[in-house]
Length: 306
Image 1 (spheres, helix red, strand yellow):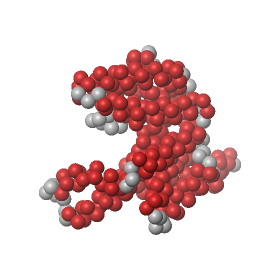
Image 2 (spheres, helix red, strand yellow):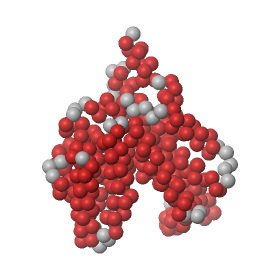
Image 3 (cartoon, one colour):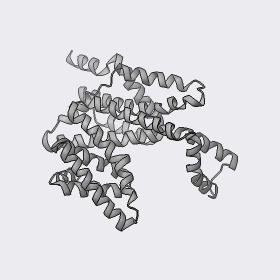
Image 4 (cartoon, one colour):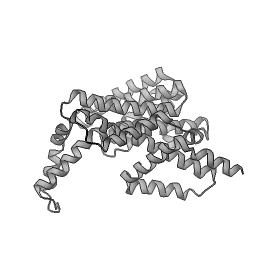
């Protein structure tokens, strides 16, 4: 079904535009649809070039403005999607298209996430306080729920801690939307025009020692009591953990492929990601960091050769 949708989107400019716009608006009800919309942008840009990809963005924006105005009476939603999702995806797709390197594209995505962190700290004097204000309606709603077991002081303390994490989590979410869209779009392109190419590319991702050292340094710094002015350093950590968790996932796929293991191991990994997300992200990220020196995939390949 998804492959058929990708094939339909590639039939022309307006087909791609309608698919991107409708999936993005549908994401208001089912957020994962935004990943598919990003995937179509990636597919169109990689396949027919940056100029035509820009035309798809412009056409999709027009369709989304009309649809959002007629259905939701909020045309600004289309502009928000264009700036926060479509443009970042298009920019990172250009990196992939010109460099032909999935690794460089992932590092560029991490750079985008860090740029989001810096922008928030630049334009908002107290990000944690601002996020707390944004979360206050949800906090009040939960306090009014019969099943909520925390008192007012405990609830405020909980949401105060969540607010401190929101900048990093938001930046990681923006980056993740770009990365997942990039992977989906490249997988569609390979499926339609070069079967098997994506799997090989994904399994060979290697982010490098400099990025691994940066992630390790950020992790160590978060264990220290940093001054408020250096909070942006802590907020960069979720971005790097997510990108190295993707490195860890690539390692897992490579090892299963090299050793001809059952795909059950990959299914188990993804199930654990759903139910133990923070722990699994940290575990996979550490695997990805250690890989830059140990090279598990190389050792596995050598053992199989013997």
